[in-house]
Image (cartoon, rainbow, N blue to C red; front, side):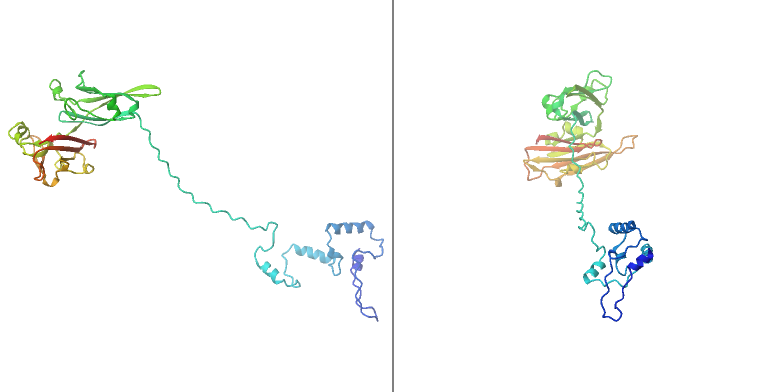
Length: 376
């Protein structure tokens, strides 16, 4: 068979002997003029054609100058090793060179540019919604204290439309009869703020009459209120013990008080002056001022304003008197304070004054304000 292939690939001479030069006869590419060779079965020719049609035998094997089977074997072996640069390859055109010099210049099946991902928007911090707390129906004690033998209390009512009743009792342990008891009216419940007022007092309950017949003991406040809801009514009862605060006397010292009961009680009178007295305190730096901002008060601090015809008396003319002392067999130092506020010359010498006293309670820190009108 090898003789047959060599015969097929034999190149004819370029010139006939003694004749004019001519081109060689083109090789018979498809073996049309090759005499039959009985040594090669016809089926083998068909197989070669089938293989050529299937692409398993390259057309180059049938062309002039095609590699021999040995050369083909060498080329197959060389394909398994890194390819060497061919020196006989034609120089690329400028366009081809430019394409070859760019990375990934060879077209691929999907030559469309890769989609650019959109920038991720910055995540804004989510603000926590402000949830308004739902008030719980009920009654709270803003403060409950006594100064000397007078008791003061303030109640605050939440969701008054669901509060059906509120009552309080001031009692002493072991005594059935309360010193004082009251039940709030629907109007007082609806106002949401209730200050204890008993008898003809502007504020508080004076227990002196009660103590005349009973032992001198603190009065506990028993608070009872009823809340209505979908399930019915629920009654709550709580008991509170009073805080103890210093007694404060605030008034106008008139000329008629000289030599009278007031002078006997206080020891000294300041005629035609507004006065604030605090006796028996252990605070040697008691805060007692005129016209101060309540927010600047410390616990136990007191400030007062006096207004006449819409004008406040300035603090510059006021004076604070103090005196310290001790009791026998007691190392505690006590102090009495008297704040004196005279009427300025450019104010009416007689008339009606509005006096407001604000204190910050020593124990609870609650702000308590009281106002009274004084004829002077």
